[in-house]
Amino acid sequence: MQTLDCTDTGIAECTRIVTSGGVVVFPTDTVYGIGCDPYSDPAVRRVFAIKGREEKKPLPVLVGSISDAESIVSLGPNGRALAERFWPGALTIVAPLKDRNISPGVTAGKSNLAVRMPANRYILSVLKTCKYLVGTSANASGKGAPRDAQSALQSLSGFDAILVDKGPLGGRESTVVDVSGPSLRIVREGAISAGAVRKAMRDERL
Image (tube, rainbow, N blue to C red; front, side, top):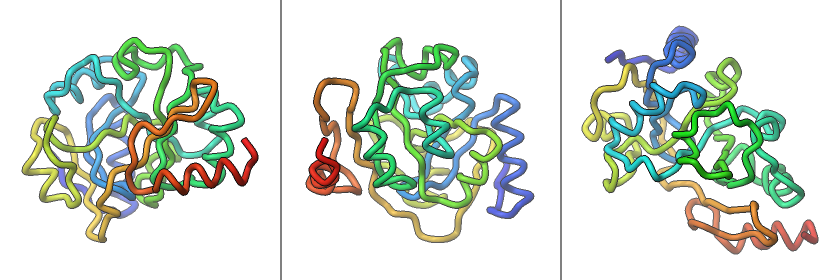
């Protein structure tokens, strides 16, 4: 396992590992995440194994831009409005899947996919090249999400590299909203309040 600093060299090596089918741990604006290329079945299976996560639970995907998100899911008017309001940031949007080449392990066989653009400059630098990255919290399933690199290292083993951000992270997981149905549904309230999400929708008159 490599420890990579958030330098140009470290970010480039993290990117190389992801594009080569490896699994990495990395900082986001909320908590530390673990992920891989969402198109790689073997890498996705490793993420499940490392976390001890049930394979029936889908994985979210981090994106580098709204346009990249719209290449793999159908955000629709609600999702687009929320993305424009809160991205980059701590809002995960569940929307109908468009790109059927994404590993079925990521979606757990479902027709929707959770996507988010994180507000962390280092992982956004990785996403400039990778475009997409599985991004679930870097903890053993059922345990608390890690707010620092040391907690991530203590919680997990078996991944290829960790990209270490020595600055503070947000510390609270993202809010999850589902826009795949006829009306918006808040799946999990996290860093962004449910009230702020609903206000954004009222402001957009959606």
